[in-house]
Image 1 (spheres, rainbow, N blue to C red):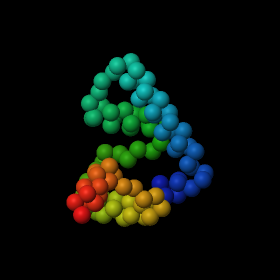
Image 2 (spheres, helix red, strand yellow; image 1 turned 180 degrees about the horizontal axis):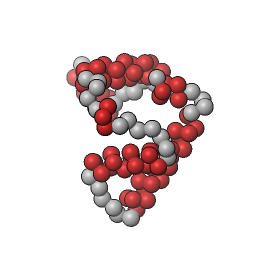
Image 3 (cartoon, helix red, strand yellow; image 1 turned 90 degrees about the vertical axis):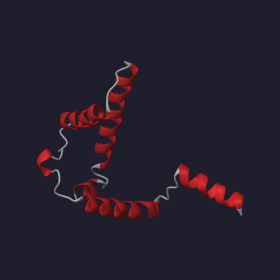
Length: 103
């Protein structure tokens, strides 16, 4: 519920600043030609959020939600979001073009 509540007007600017700040941080790393693995990249996200004093889920919470439940929740949230902002992937767009060409 926290994220749903924070998407309200009061929290949105805070999160927008955090995202912009993180992108600035990553751009600096890239400009300095630093390379990192995906694991290091994920760790940098947590470090940045901790620095900004955002609450991060602790490791002891891992495994409390099944993959199936997480997948179902993600699909439900996507369906609700996609009603307001229809997203068509590049792949789907190309498949649709191919199907139209074959008809």
